[in-house]
Structures are given as C-alpha cells and as structure tokens.
Image (cartoon, rainbow, N blue to C red; front, top):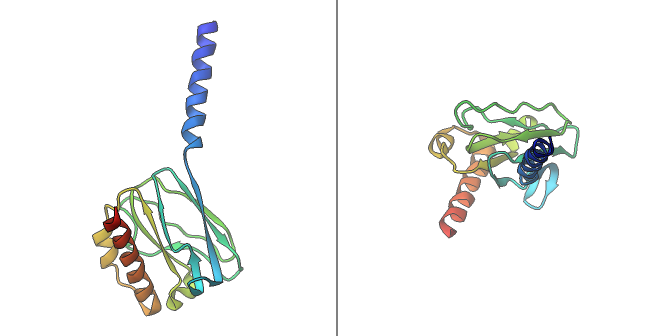
Length: 150
C-alpha cells in the first residue's frame, strides 16, 4: 500500500512539474503602443508547444482572430469577440497570423511562432491588404533576423 501511495505521489508531482514549465505570455491589444496606433504588443511572440498566450483587450473595440491561411494544418482557428480577453494554448508548431478584425486595415496584426515554424512558406504566401500587408512583412523580417542571429 505504501509503495502504491509513493507511486501515486510521484506521478502527481511529475504531472504538476510538466504544467509548471508551460509559459503564459500576455499580448495586449492597444489603441496606442510603442510601435504606433492600433497594435498588438508584443506583435511577434515565440513560444514552445504547450505554452499559452493571453490576448488582453485593453479596449472594448478590439478582438483577436486567426488570419485565414496563416495557421498550421489541423490547428484550431482563434475567434475572439470584441472587448474580450482570449487565452489560447498553442499545441501545434508553426506560424499563426492573428488580427483585430475592426483594425486589420490599419495594420493591427501579430504573429505567434510556436516551436519550429513549419508552415512559414504558406503563411508568407497568404495575401494581406492595407497596412496589414506592410505590418506582416515587417514581422516576417523580424522573425528572419532573429533566426539568422542564432
């Protein structure tokens, strides 16, 4: 009986330790940030599979949702409502492009990179419009610079 209790305790501790190593990153949806107006801050986030990103709506006019075509195959799209915080645990490696729908044309986009960006070519090929096109190109440039620096 004592041996069974020790095994149960060890299994519980290993489970808790595994979840303790998962990170949570906050991304704010802002009317004005260090990079300008109508931005996600930070706009480029790198996490490991199993990590969580909490999108904080600092204003009721912001939402977060996946940009169609900018997520790994079989990944669940993000579809937050205006003014709501959204917490997402990213399990599938790859590049996820997200936007604030009301401010997409103003360039309010972000990129979440989970583990190895396996779908980077597909994500780059996804058409963007307005200022979002320029903003997303800048995020791909930042990602390339960070990758080259390693």
